[in-house]
Length: 296
Image (cartoon, rainbow, N blue to C red; front, side, top):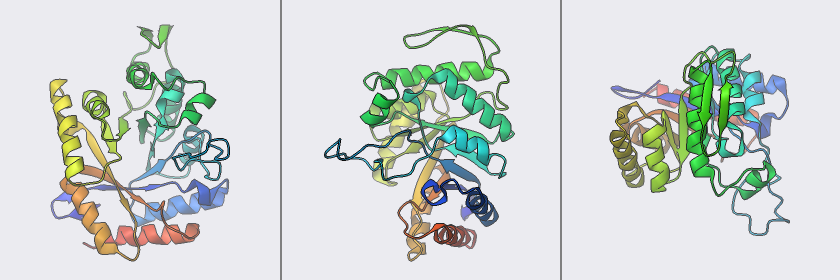
């Protein structure tokens, strides 16, 4: 879908789990609506547990017990039968899960979609998540990098022997392996320099939690330099932006979208997270937003 003359951006939408719940008809209606509107991909979020604010005074994040969340592997497997859209995880908190299990789940989703899957991953920030999943939060950065190495080997090699700090595989493999070998991995980050350098070294894509503009430009310079230092082409790392859908301010939304594409984003998620209303209201807002982009 063209966002400005001479450039093309793939538009994405998030799966509104809090509005859909377990209503299969609502899930189908939502998917059909965004596919008809011209969206190219659907993103599914992840949080296994939420925090009880009474037990965690001053809880800083949004993922408390009042917020509905999904289990991405289960949901994406189901959604693969309902849509021809590319499916993505946005994002799996990778260090809370065994690498081999995530590799197997991702391979299954990739096969179910015929190679239309992109694995979005992040380090995570919630100590409640890590404690509940029996994972060590202190070592998550180093474990994250080793996990990606293990997963890529499992996706591309029939037999894997690996001995690392966190993982040991002795003549193991997954069968069947995915259509895409390897599955593209997009890494979500803040502006922490170490996290940005990691994207440049090992990421296929980058999902920055950074506003477009000067702050993003500075972060991108770190990503690009790390890629060059690792002998990689920075232009091959797909940047994914996020723009809030604002039905009463379509021009502002389009201006922000243009800023992302000018910064090199090849895909942009149009987010309705901050919108009030029911599922029909979110579908209408996304349909209007896509039409505004198409009508440029």
